[in-house]
Length: 387
Image 1: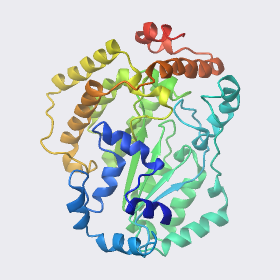
Image 2 (image 1 turned 90 degrees about the vertical axis):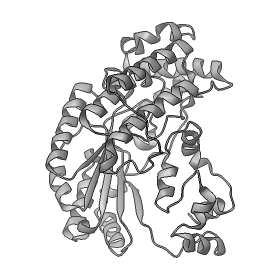
Image 3 (image 1 turned 90 degrees about the horizontal axis):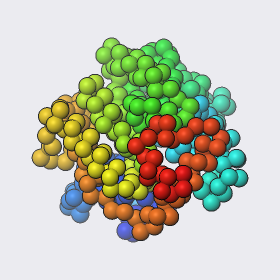
Image 4 (image 1 turned 180 degrees about the vertical axis):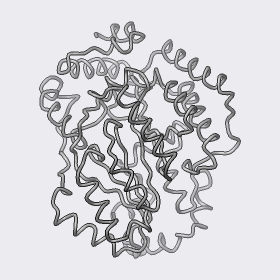
C-alpha cells in the first residue's frame, strides 16, 4: 500500500481505480466517493475538504515518509477464496471456481476474449491461518468494519469459522461485518451471527428480477433467488440486518433494470451498484443501439411516474443511512436514467459489438442455451453482428 499511497499523494492515478473513475465520468456515486467521505473529503470540493480533513495529519505523515502510514487499518476487505457455485458471465476465475473450469474451454474457443486468470487460494480452509488472522485483528483497536468476499461467501465454511472465532473472543461486539451473496444460499446460522456482531450488512447480488438473471448468473434460478431474498427480508424485520441489492449493470441486464427498481421501491431496499460494468468491455451498456436505449429509458420513466419519484436537491453520498432510504432509492433511479440518456458510444463500438456476439456465443457453446430465449428484444441487434 505504501507505493499506492505515494502515487496518490503525487497526484498520479492508478489502473486499479479505473472502475471508480468510470463511474465518476457517468455521474454515478462511486466507491471512491464513499471512501473519501470517511475522511470528510468530497469530490466536488476536493482541495478545501482535503485540507480540512480530520485525517490531514495522517496524509501529511505519509507524504513525508514515502507513502508509509503510522495508523493501523480501520476497514478490512478479506478475500476468503474463489469457491463458488455460480459462473456469472461477467465474473472471472479469480473469484469463481466454477468459472475457472469453464475458462479452460472458453480460452480455446475465443482466446483473445478469455485470457487466463489466477485463482484465489482458499487460505481460510487452513485452521492455523484462521487462528493467526483472528489473533492479529483482535489486537487492532481501530478496526470498525470487516468485509468478507469469496467466491460465494455464504457457501464457504471458513466464513462461519472466522465469525464464530470472533464471537468467542467477544471481538464481535465492537465490530461490524459485511458480505455479499448471490442469493442461492440461505442458512439459519446467519441468524445467530447477526445477533452477535455490532452490525451486519448483507449485499444481495442480483441483476434482474427477470429470467435473464438465470442467463447472466448461470446456473441460478430466479425463483429460488427470490425465495431466499424473501427470507433475508424477513430476517431484516426481526434483527438489525442491513440489506442492499448489489447490481452490476451490463448490456444484458440493463433492459430489465426496471424490475430491480420496482423490487427496491416495494421493499425499501436500495440498489447499490458495485459499479457499472466496464470489464469485459464487450458487456458495457454503451454498446446498446439507439432503439433499445430509448425502450429502457421509457421503462425507467414509467417507474418514476408510477411511484411519483422526485430527485433530491443535494447529492447523497452516504447511502446506507436508514433515514435516507426513500431519497436514495429515487436518486439511484434518476442516475440510471441520466446514464442512459447521456452515455457516449465508444470509438470502437462496432468492434466491441462483434466481440459481444463472440463472447456470448462462446458461453452458449458450453451451456447449450441462447440469449434470445431471455431477451427476444435483442434479436435484430445481435443478428446484425453475426449472432
